[in-house]
Image 1 (cartoon, helix red, strand yellow):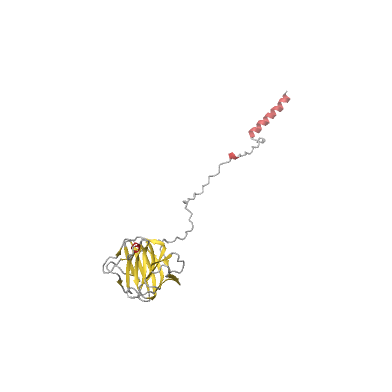
Image 2 (cartoon, rainbow, N blue to C red):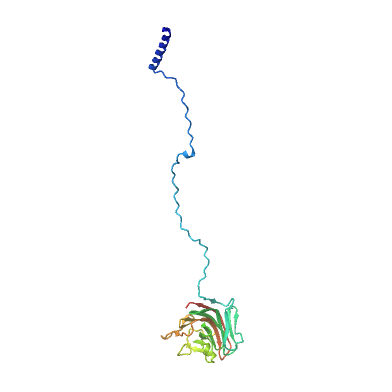
Length: 277
């Protein structure tokens, strides 16, 4: 019995001694931790990023199409040099043989040839009518005796206003102003109503008499009729009022030539133009 206890006691003493001296215990294996697997929903949030600055939006603008040329408004005004289509010009005869043609083109001019006495030939532009207008013509006296060269405005079936000058014959260097009345003509009365009132015609040095070129201007504006020769206004004179007449208010413009008792008149119109008065 004693033999069995002695070895047991010795073993216990040795074990206690080891504990007191701090001898390291034998390491034991620890379980290896499993690696964590992150599911997509477990991903950490991304660091915040700055939103791109918002580009200011410009107001939408209408598409701009190429600008097409705009024709200047002229009120139907024209400048005729008689070198193209003349279908807008219509002749008519007040006195003389209405079956004859007294007007024709000559180069780039409109030529009036009046071979007989007492012939009054006219040409009007039928393409446009005017209330108020300034019409001007440049005309050359080519040959002939006593003559009349005229310009008119507000032509209609009622009549027209006429400005007439003389460059040859006994009345050379004078001018006249009339309102032609078709109703008076139908009654076999003198259709030319004198607008100068107290005189039949007026003399002026502004007319280039003889075989020469003159520029004539006629303005119809409201009830006023104003006359120009080579750029110089003729009326009013001597402090008097300008010509006034309110019978005609609208119509065409045109030109004319007259032969009187001597016959044979040849004049050429270089141009006719209209503009605002």
